[in-house]
Length: 269
Image: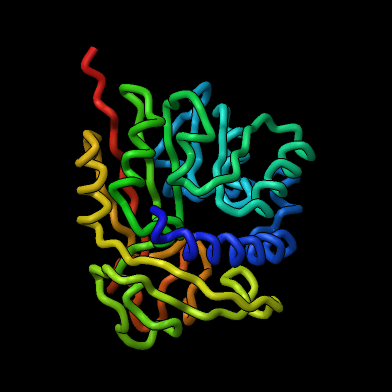
């Protein structure tokens, strides 16, 4: 992964800026969350079901809000993220709320060198896979940490969304993107007016690439679901539906915006 180290470092710095800005945004609404509001969405809550007593590893956990929400649902949780600012705040939130959790700061590819043990569930969600250039290595990390019979659950923004330009007005990027996408940004999805500027490096991954990477390490796909909405208001030109979800104005229920999947590590015992 040495050829990507400069990209990873730039992304670490950009996510440090985001994490510092996100703590006080209404998008994350940390104070309401501290008071008991669940940060998890109905998609993952419905599809994952009861996690009580399960060990759960959350990859690319940002500042741990969802990780700690899983702890509230009864899981024994560990979170990992590239951003040291995010992990520092995750540990602070765990201490403030009295929720048991462990947090590791490292690149997801390097996690086997920083964390021991196996987990019942490996979890990742919303806006994470695009920061990873090599999905084969990503899938290997997932398989490494899963117990036999354990499962990987993934809810993510659909790659069709990432084909559009920043204003969602025209198709700009390939569905099967192989080259790095370089973008210069101001503000953040959680606060467009935040006084931060940074450069990002990302990659678009098709559904087939995601699924085949998981199958390639021996995981068995249990389901794949696609949704024509986002539970988050993090894209431009969205309209809120009666169901509380967000759709792109003019493209309502025409394009997929989110997908989810579950893949199990088969036990041969």
